[in-house]
Length: 444
RNA sequence: GUGGCCGUAGCUCAGUUGGCAGAGCGCCGGGAUGUGGCCCCGGAGGUCGCGGGUUCGAGCCCCGUCGGUCACCCCA
Picture 1 (tube, rainbow, N blue to C red):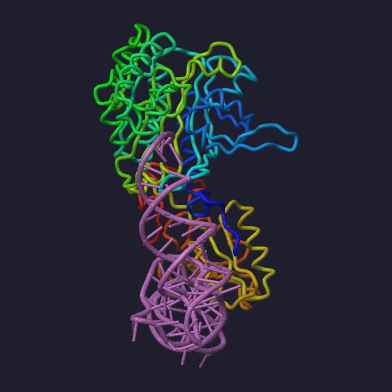
Picture 2: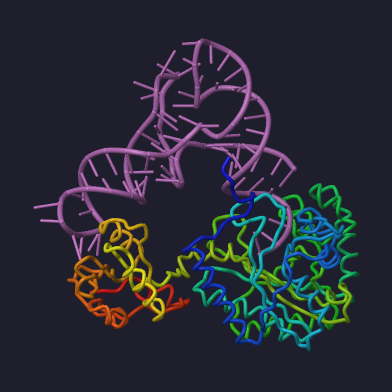
């Protein structure tokens, strides 16, 4: 039996991995101009970091966490999400507030894989700690929205809700519990049983039974205390002014217990599959305290890279094409000359590859063609004797040219015979990357 | 965790009432003396996921198992 990646995990190979590179660079650029700095935290944490923050009763902690004991008997867990570790890092190091950080990380959940759902997936996200200001909520939400749009996405929706705070939520939960208690037999088995632990979950349930039973349930937004109501109003007004379209969704509860006030979720409308949530987040004003820090508000979002790219595929946007090689070296005269020429090209900053194993010229040229290089540099017995190299364009049918060894690097660099100069070194995104003319082959 | 569907070459798949394991693409080589793509010829590559059963005989039928995939729940 050949070895293979564990269930629910996947490899990202070239050229798809190039797309990931460009995506990460784009995200970094997008959030760093807004003052967010990259933070790396461990891929596993003391399991209590998640139990306390996300909540024992949540699905993610209760049945999906990858928990293990290390050789020293410590209870650890692979991170199921990005926020709790970042907040743990804040509590431990106490950087100055406001603390604005971003991350890119794998996340692990033991679930049955399906389209758009993995046991190891990858998230991009930001966290902003300190301000209670509703304008920070607006900043964080619009940052995600504008990032999606910068990739070319257009078919997605944003839903927002307010979860209230310690002041108003307990009273609302009692009201909801009373309402649902009278309809307990109508709820689906799972949420009927969990009604006492967390009745909010029933609002989020998609089963028709729960759906019907919660139809006329009181909405949290109608029971917010004055500060929470004012906060929510200002968030909505800010999004309106910035032109970020959204819908209020009273059922939007989300699966982590730490959320307070603003919660939000982005869904692709282009994805056919069931898992169409491409990003989500919310405010977590109590989380820092739960992890042993001083009362400190915070808000953040996470974006699922795999789902985001699936959504891009569905919309036909964010097509990142790796830059072509500048040259491919073919040597049928012993190999020394080709070896040295390849090294010289690379030292000069050009993208160059070559053939190995002394194959026939036909074979080497075939490899040159497949490589996507703009030009083949051929060294045979004649060139070796004359101290020259033959430049053969590969992207169009023009003639070839003989250049002295000393002039080869400059000839490739200047794009002689090629109809264009050498390719750029780093990919770009958005309009540039989605425009085939900008990243496709060149030539007359 | 539950359910549907599917496991044949590197990839996509065909394989008739059970009777010699195939195609396309890809890969390697060749098409005279030094030239890629298009075309032509040839070649390599398989424990038919694995284990049992039925049968003279199983890729095909039966049971189990593992894997993949989609869906539920939940989430990125």
